[in-house]
Amino acid sequence: MRGRLCGREPPAIHLTRVKLALMTQRLVPWPHAGPVVVQEGQAETEQLHLIDAWQHLATVSAGECDVPLDELARSASARRRGFEIDEYRILARALRDTRLRVRPLTA
Image (cartoon, rainbow, N blue to C red; front, side):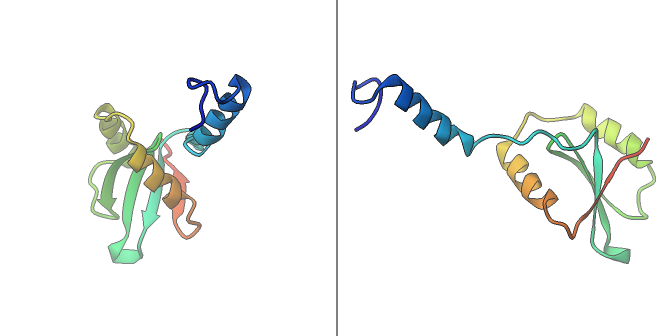
């Protein structure tokens, strides 16, 4: 058994071990200036996902949305939930996929 509390490890080594373990849990800051639209699918099956600050705000089918996307994003942002680590991990992995079309939401 290692650890500072049981006296078997110097404080500096224990702190280094803790920092190394926590580095795998470090969150990446939201890489965009604001909300983005992620386009998925082709033509009639295309869906638009509104994402901001690692939160999925809404999904709409392309061509079937009567509300402008920026207005939809504002109303969805008003209903934000707390941060969810699983959602962050899914979105962080998905946004690295170069096959997805990601574009800033323009006002």
